[in-house]
Length: 401
Image 1 (cartoon, rainbow, N blue to C red):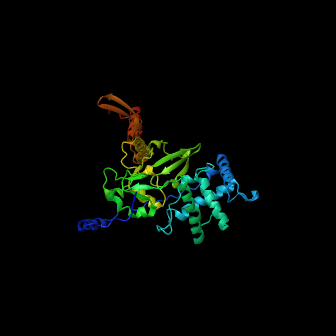
Image 2: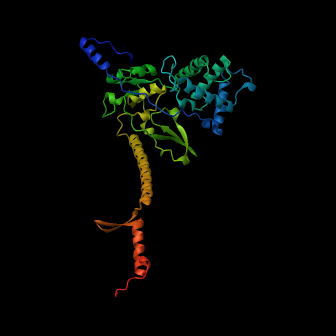
Image 3: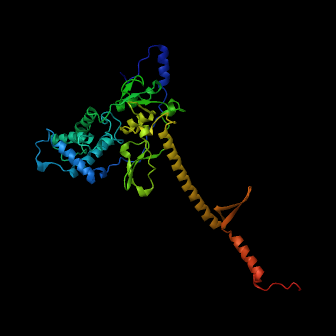
């Protein structure tokens, strides 16, 4: 059973007064700001294995009733399909993505998640998307999947993306979101519920619940709506020469491939233990739903897990963040030492070795000089010159005189 998203009317004067007090509280949530852009690349489709799998998808499309009569010469090949996929990915962002107005007339559905475009099985989710797209292309006599005009944008949303979403849900590739929201948070998440069109459960134990929203330990209602953790990156996949990196508090469509030689990719961690199994629901903080509404795309639950301090995956992630911070601090420390050495050279100070240290006693150590102070060098040279009788520019004084 699902709960209506509108707040119930007060049943008594006292309850109405309490409602009037609570509704005056301002929602502290602010929409995320990002300079990143969704990453669209053909590398997963253009390699030999990807093209072969696209040929299998095409073979299945052309046995459908809608395309069975298509002449062989008019049929697309795998490389042409790659271009169509890239157009659909870009259109998915331009029509439904982060920069679109937060208007239900514009955002008529959530942006299709990236993973449904990466399923290259013959009867997988990409097959369902392409089937809807090519049928719309044929019925409208389109040359490509363009969104330049308002009419084409509406047709693309209604006849491709909206229909594809229905097909993906019908065949089990997308799940309906059913979320339990604590009563203390419902008035703050009311607009996000409407924007994402989720079903709201009465209890966390209701059948079919996919997500349970909880206030993180140590936070109150208001702080849970505005407090994000420190930003981090997570390695999703490692190939021979590149690594797919996920950026925290961004949807998966913003994941980016970086060269392995760049050193920008964190160490890979297996996060499979953090994924709920046996029908259990995700436990996430309120920002998961609020950010999903802002991006109009389902956020990655691993970035928003709540109350999982004892979880091994969370400990690994915290350990990785600490290692990254230590590396950054180490780099900053080395830079600081370098600047100190340059300053010492300019001021004429001496540098001590940070490694070659000898312990003379349990309370005494001796540290060796790397670069001597110019005054010490001059003094030593003066002593040598004096002992050799050349200091002062003349012979030493005769002690008898």
